[in-house]
Amino acid sequence: MEIRRETIKRAKRVVIKVGSAVLTLQSGGLNEEAFTQLSLAVSSLLGKGMEVVVVTSGAVAAGMVKLGLTERPKSIPEKQAAAAAGQSSLMGRYEKVFAAHNLNVAQVLLTHEDLSSRHRYLNARNTLFTLLSYNVIPIINENDTVVVDEIKFGDNDNLSALVAGLIDADLLLILTDTDGLYDKDPRSHADARLIPLVEKIDSHIEHMAGGVGTSIATGGMITKVQAARKASSVGIPTIIASGRDMSNIDKVFASEKVGTLFLPQSEKLTSRKHWIATVLKPKGAIIVDDGARDALITKGKSLLPTGIVGVEGDFGIGDAVLLEDKEGKRFAQGLAGYTHAEILLIMGHRSSRIEEILGYKYCDEVIHRDDLVVL
Picture 1 (cartoon, one colour):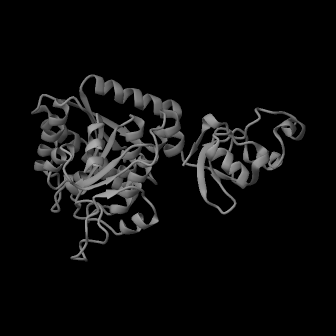
Picture 2: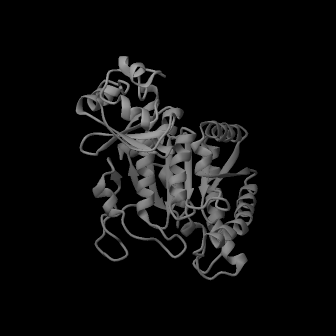
Picture 3: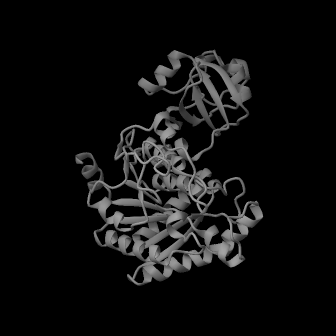
C-alpha cells in the first residue's frame, strides 16, 4: 500500500485511457452514463490541481449506429467510414458532459506517423502543453479515418503509453471492462486471483494477459499490459482498472487498492530519448559483441564500429535501429549514424579507419550515446 500511496502522491499530470467496452453499450451506441461519470471524476481531479489528458476509444462503435451496422466492420474502408461517422458523436458527447462542469475540451487526432517525425512530435507536445495551460482537456484518439495498418484494437492502448511519454505524465490509468490483471482468465476460472502489484513485466506476466475482449473491443488485456510495459520502460507507472464503475477513478487517486499497479522499470527519460525508445519503429538491427554490449549498458559509451559483428535490415542515416547481442537479445535502440551498407564495410574496424575504408567519415560513432537508449 505504501508503494501505491507514494506513486499516487507523485501523480500531478495523468493520462486516462478509456476503452470502447467502457464507453459503449453492448446493444450499440455510446453509454451516456459512462461519459457523465467520467466527466465528474476528471473535473474532481482538475479541482485538486491535477492535469488530465484523455485518450479515448469509441468512434468506430459510435459510427456503427449511424451506418446501421450490427457487428463491428471487418474491411478497412468500413472501419474508416464508421470512425469518421462516429467521431463527431464521440466529441459531441465529451463537449456536453464537460460543459456541465464549465470545462472545455479539445479534439486531438494522431497517427503513428505524426509522432515518428521529430518535428511533428514536438508540435504535438507543445500543442498539448498549451491546451493544458488554458485548462482545456485534450481528448486524443487515433486518426482512424486515414490510417490503414494501425486501425485495429490495441492501438489506443499503445497510443496512451506514447501520449504519456509525450507529455511527461506521472501516471497512466487504463480503464477497461475488467478489474485489472488476473493470474488466469476470470471468465473461465472461478478461482482467478486479481494481481494488485506488478513490479516487473516479463513473459510470464504477458502470458497471464492472453485472451480476447468483448465484441466491441476485440483485443484483450495483453495490449494493455504491453502499453504498461512501454510506459514502464520510460519511467511511468501504469494502473489498469475497471471503468465499469467510474468511482474507481476517485478510489485510485485516494490510493485505494483498485486494479493492478505496474511499477516503472527506469527513471523518466527525456522527451527525445522517449521518442527514440518507444515511438520510432526500428528499420533494422545491429549485432554487437559482448565487450561493446557491456560498454553501452554499464559505462554509457557510444557504439563504435569495432564492436559490431553483424547488421540486419535496410536502413539509412538517422533511422531507428535495435541493438542485439550475439544471442539475439535486444537491449537498446538508437539512431544510426551510418547506413547499413556503410556499417557492413566498417564493422570490426577502429574508428580511425572509417575514412580510409569509405573515403569519407561523418563521425567516429555508429550510434552516439545521445542517440541511444538502453531498453
